[in-house]
Length: 451
Image (cartoon, rainbow, N blue to C red):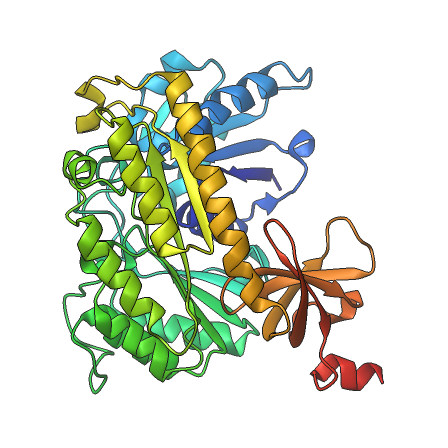
């Protein structure tokens, strides 16, 4: 039995792909291992959205090649594989196979061909019509949290983004299959699901099968209500595209307790001029109106975002508009990136005229503004009770456990490892830089059992 080590860089879609790759390989008789040094096959599932993730690929393959042990079969999967194809063999010595984003269902056959002596195999073909989207419990990244793809690809063509080229056009999975999958996960003990896609709220299935009888102006809001009806304890979704984010999504969250009170809504810039250059399809004012509606919810919805600084042509005044928008929105968290040109995107041909030094200065200034806003926002949780799905022991403290709230905050508190997998009520007592700390409420399930 050949052992396979699988490493994943990138977004939740990549993690989800890796789970299905591992499921396929295990069914075909391969043994998945967490020890790279013991693996006969090393697979690297890559991201191309950020330059840093792509660079990790080159570093990893080089390290494996010079590890001093017999060289394993090395394969590259994911977005970089899809974009680079056979050119990867010329760029990186030591690669044996390249499998694109839609060919992962054939990974076991490709590996076997290499083991049989075939060299330089590339599969960038389309996904099989009978592709199995299910993940076995043994290969899930968590027994309690599951990623559920609902839409693949992107039609937006933002000028900086490679996803439409690496993932293809938007294809929505049938609602009936999504609901069936969620029901199976619930029966297997999953407590929280994440409906995922490059733009989940762009969900447009070919038929209404599975959505009949559910209200909502958009198919995505109807899907949210349909998934809520499965009774799964917690539902999150990521990522939302501002142009397609409608009020009925917030209405669904307000109406259904198991739809979690967290929305990730990437703004990318606060300048209308830069948003136009990015071809985002929204303005700062239209975005603010969505923020206002989210803030009006009685659910106290946590809002997070993505922002790019130093996009080609961004002036000091443009950047000032972004800082102002961050202060207006009051994000609970923001993922800030310095612009890096991605070959193959429209922005790659633009003049990258913001210097690396200026990008760093803007990054630090925006990070400071966001941190100040974030710290003020997080204070609202002190003294409040949050429902926390306990997922693991805390990293630094042996007698602490860690999990996520419905508003997607990391919460640490004192408690035994036996709590892992349960949902506990925790009273927040302290705000950390990127997390919350609390104590078990007296009426929580665990506290009553401990008494």
